[in-house]
Length: 541
Image 1 (cartoon, helix red, strand yellow):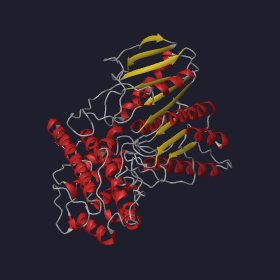
Image 2: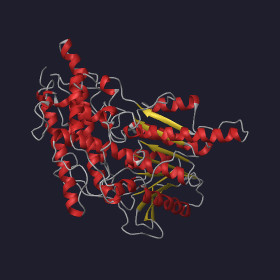
Image 3: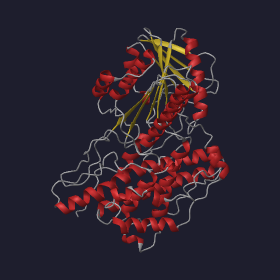
Image 4: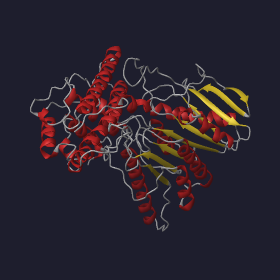
């Protein structure tokens, strides 16, 4: 098998979507009334809710009575030093976002139709669902006071913002008319389990000096977390270099302490196992797990398709999952009061029982996966803090009980909020609907309750990996649709906005030919009532 060089660092590509912030001028303290200015027919109001969270309201002169409330995604609650790969010096910000990413095109399109937009920067960054929901409730009141002719509020949000939006719809259906939780996080416990499993796998196979949780309090814990980020990305870079040098049997990183006998298994197989046992998708921004460079002999092409491409996908996605694990674990441990990850009872063999046959070549066959799983079964596990784990479960969960129309949308290869997060909410809503139907029949009602949840999916193409003229993987193109975190186009966001407006006006989601036409024109949006995404590993399977 030939060696190859990556045209661009996978690490930088993989994590770039996590931190996308738009900067605007914001107030620094709570204000009883917003400060407003008008230009070009749009009034922009800046203020802060009682918790000091800054907000922005933008309202056109032809305001039609409907306002879009946007909740932004997860932002780390600590700064990330500039020297750490992939982040380039993140500074904690509470900048409000009145639309996805503060995108001017999305904002302009909504304002032009007579809709208003608003969003908060929230008082605390990191995992802030409980406080953010309260902030949004207050912000709705602020807007209605400023614009008494408001008739409808529609809520939408990305990632953690999707979690907040779903919770808002469940808890305050009287305040909103429709909701769109996008690329949403599901309950926090399974999300952190996925992240913890990914980080523990990297630590166990590649660098045991990674702390991976149980961080100390204060500045010491912050230093430990930042040190883990450096170590994780060092491992990612080392693995990238090893696969580039010898795709068939890449060397194990120098930091790895696995037994020499296990090193007979290619290190890339350990990457694939970590992805499978944690639930990280096997398609990434640039690797479809099926393509091979042109011009290879048939046997080499098959090896690339079945073994090497999947390992490169796992590598690219694990950069995202591990980054989430470090930053979010440090954050949530502070709130929960101790270590929140516990895998003392986890059966990783059962986790991959079915998938190990699907990805047999990538795992180096039965012998390879058996050796890797045997090692995991023998090494010490992580014991969490029971009180902290119990506290984790209280940091807002979803019931699935929603009475207003909701629209879900996520990529099926999202490595951070994997599609199982959306599927979990679909399952909960289905259970709730079944309960209502059973109760209705018991009362003698024969009309089945309407299904007012619309689940849309963003699927990657079957083939999209690109190669240079020399046959090396090319990671310079934009991430494929359906991959990376919340990787949506302006057209898709605007389609969601239109679907929200319809749902708010009609009390139900769009359906039939009108729906199919809407999502077809937006591109890469799929509605398939028969599709079920893989469940989160935390829930079994």
